[in-house]
Amino acid sequence: MNSNEGIVNLETDYLVIGAGAAGMAFVDEVLSRCKTSTFVISDQLARPGGHWNHAYPFVTLHQGSYFYGVNSEVLERDPREIDLSSKHEMLAYYDKVMRKFLASGRVTFLPQTSYQWREDGDEDHVVKSIILSGVTYHVTVRKKFVNACAQQIKVPSTHVPSYQIDKDVRENCVPINELGSLKRSYEEFVVIGNGKTGIDAVLYLLNQGVSPSSIRWVVSRELWWYDRKWFGPSSAQDFIIEIIRVLGEEDDTGAIFRRLEDKGILMRMQDDPDAEDPKLFRCATITKAERDAVQNIKEFVRLGHVTRITRDRIVFGDRGSIPTVSLFPL
Image 1: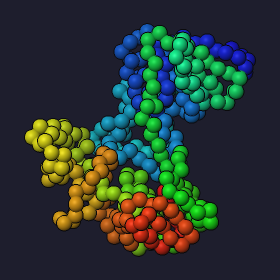
Image 2: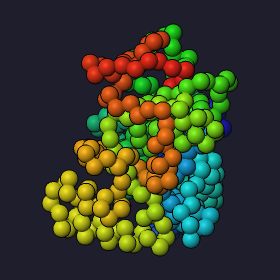
Image 3: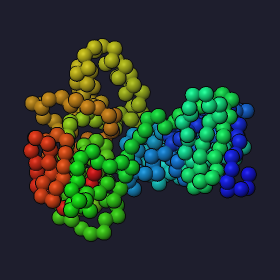
């Protein structure tokens, strides 16, 4: 249809919502195994890659690239090393994969479109163009509707913080994405968030030459971390064997994590024999060198979750507060 207005009728075997890692992997697998299946992929963004489009500019994979991507296209540069692909490499990779999909003649990509969730009794699936307000796609699905966005992955640049930020300090509270494009220098930094994104922010500042004495890190809850050395080409099989062995021999969750720590598979941010075991595990992966690099920062703030940032204080509910400083990567 050449008009910018109207209804476009499509038929396909699979309608896939989301052109991120999950959606692309699904299409790649079925496309390679079934030589007749057809696909329509809808995504709200202009290009494939999912949350990588919104990620901060210095982000990389935290596990080896050979664990990621689609089966028909190699991502890693060197299969002998733990290769950590960058954001820009990830987006270029998914562009390449999508071009291969389209060249097959069996994939239709609808970028910048929004899937309209069906009401009971609706026969066709409806996808609306975001750019062209008058264009709607009615999609008849012969085999399967695939929601590849069910995980609802969020990154700092796509959602607002859960705590209050007073108006007169908002210009100094930025998502981690903006660390790579600051317009001025700051005397101190407070990093809020203690997961993989948080340690990436701390390491980025240190790598840019910021003094450790100028960085404070708000650690709301202690985490378990994977040691990346176990995700190398020569150690991945041993990693799986050790995990299965421990799960088979231990019933208590705490005992499982302590056994994995004894094996060197898991580690905590600080080796304090008197500290309680971490209560949270998100599969974040770092090296011991990265962990050690952040130990010399000015302060680890362990007062729980931030509830408010004012001109003078960072407030942690009824657990206390600390003085406000220059910039807060969120």
